[in-house]
Length: 252
Image: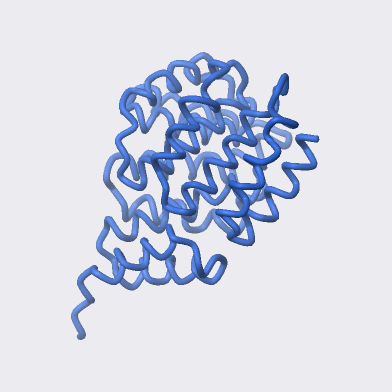
């Protein structure tokens, strides 16, 4: 059962059992993948295990062969595509023109303002594709949604607007601004939906932003936090090496 497999997969992801998790999904794929509209999401989880093992090539292959295979007809598929390409891009991987196809699909939903979680993931694609017009329109859409009433207005006010602006700032190379906007969101990001695995995009982006900013103290703090969750994670250990090479702040 795909949903039962999904539950076990989340446990393995949070416990840092990347190699075991990838093997677990591969071993049962003949049972959960055929004729399943949910299979793309489990392939996404397998890609996350490969990324945690610092194997970007395997994750990108899954994007091409499994995750994008259905053509991204559903918002749920687009979510997985955006978050995976964002992680790959954070690691410095060249994803070619894959962003453009995703961004085009998201643009059909650009003015909806229906669900803040979708809007934030759409922003990832617009930033990845370098589409400034779409980025600005997405921010305006979320701001408009935030002025309304109901659950999505609350999610847009508390998370959506700042998250969209923060990811846009990262894409523009303003890493200090990205950290300023994204850091306060982590403790309350659950309020706008998604799983722990999906919301880990905040920690990924903050860690990479601190390293690119050259802020050794902040980068070490983010890395140590990630290592406290998954001390043997190859990707976390790789971040630790990069952070350790940053110039130490001058003593006053």
